[in-house]
Length: 147
Image (cartoon, rainbow, N blue to C red; front, side, top):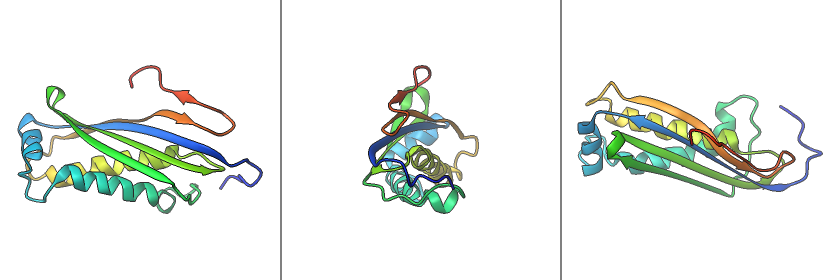
């Protein structure tokens, strides 16, 4: 791991996004709450939050962090036949939380896939990316294209 011992504690925030594209019929089943495995959007949200908290267990060089806030939203987008996922992670500390936000989005997307794969194996998980970060030595950053 990188030595962050000499860094100052600052408020650090990262926002990541991604999506799961699917057949319109699959999205309709999810929105109606008619999937056999249960409430897909709520379970995916919870899975994303849990994943953010366990990122250092999954990514070998990540520091274990005491997160102060994790929010995950899974929003149906019927016009594009997909579920849009956003994770926001915050802490006051010596290292950023981009990996935690990316992990939250990724695991939420995988959970959606798992819960809906019985009716749609053609789902596509895509566009997982950091769209915003703030805090630390490098300061604030926002994705200017494709967010």
